[in-house]
Image (cartoon, rainbow, N blue to C red):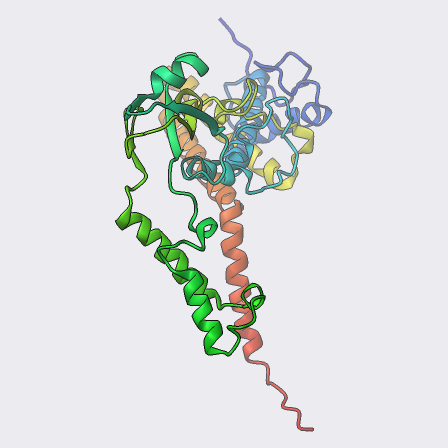
Length: 379
């Protein structure tokens, strides 16, 4: 059976590649035959036969372009993933400049704000219970969660159960503010002026000392207003003696623990980042050179696999040994080297690497400027 092999030229037409990704790209159509001829010449044609057909060259060319596109897209996705997560997958990112921001970083930080009550994306709700005289323990699950949150478990963040603020009880009889103020007025000779109390300006530290005295008095001389909360069982201190409402703030645990914060159709990971294949016509010299070399490496490996089917062929009076194993090894070595070079190049152009490079340039420039003589002006 005689199978046609490379004749030295070819004529590409759509449908000659396995996937047809670039078949209707005019630049691809123009370059496909040129690359096929170049690869054949690099592998010894016409001095040696190249046991391949034009479709083999086209398949290698298509794969090389796709590999280049995939590597570029993977590194772009990795570099901008922090900014892209949560954005709609309907956006086309290929060929677009991605603007970075602190949005995702702030989103991560909001989780701490949720717990501290200083922000976040979980609603803090308010509820209350009616204290009953002589009843000390109250089940918030029964009194509030089952009724107002359909049985969803709540986590109480804050209970409003304390003395009224000291500032509203400034003239507390325990502190003796009135007498102290009058004594101070007498020492200045203003004791006989009754309106003077209204116009006396005290230093701020005096107010703070009085507030602290009131709070210390409440703590030592009175029953402390406090509570214990275990498994949403609220124990009140002191034991209530009259009916009153006690308010509290809480979050619904199912809302706080829900990890699905974004709508369906948002970027979640590398698998659905909307980077599409780079069109061959938009690739410039740096990428074209890499694609050509990778195509050649694929063709070497392919030709080696073909020749390796028969390690030797009989000829009159001897046998001819084919170099299939050598071509396979060389092709794979070239592929590995090209992929390594491309990855290192892409890493060097990432955001972090570029910032480090700019910092190094800035430092070097500053060292140069330090050598410039400084003029001293004398007036």
